[in-house]
Image (cartoon, rainbow, N blue to C red; front, side, top):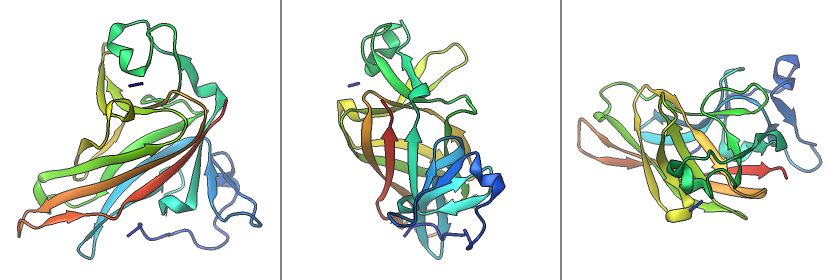
Length: 218
């Protein structure tokens, strides 16, 4: 295959409603919350106080985190065979290679990865357009982010296997889903930034780099 959103989680909020999707890590080692399923906006873009910010939004519990506050688990159950269609060759050998897939269509057993800009008001940025730049992917393998249309044909949004950075267009106020496919098990860091041009002034605004941490289970 070829500054952080404010942490809105108050002390004691983690409870029964969160157990199904998030498992708190041991306090002795880290304060990160571990997610292995549930509806998560892995990239949640906001514009506040003149700055673009990127964080992670737990849609099911309406909690926002900084990316450094979460760990993302891609379960063994996510491992699938690349479709036997040459259009999917960017993932590996069609019909042969394996990838670990967080899918565009919700599977309640896995993380359902979203990209959102619902906290960005209409008319703030020129054309209501933002650019999400996938800056780097470090890990044992490659990451591809792509969508599939109604007849199952892919559109690649970002692919670390053919060079980065890659740019994904995001619309202010929008919320979308895509497939996130890793081609090897192990630990990954994925760094992104959001950029837009203010409609009122023409000023270009860019967020600080945000790094997502994934563990892909073998």
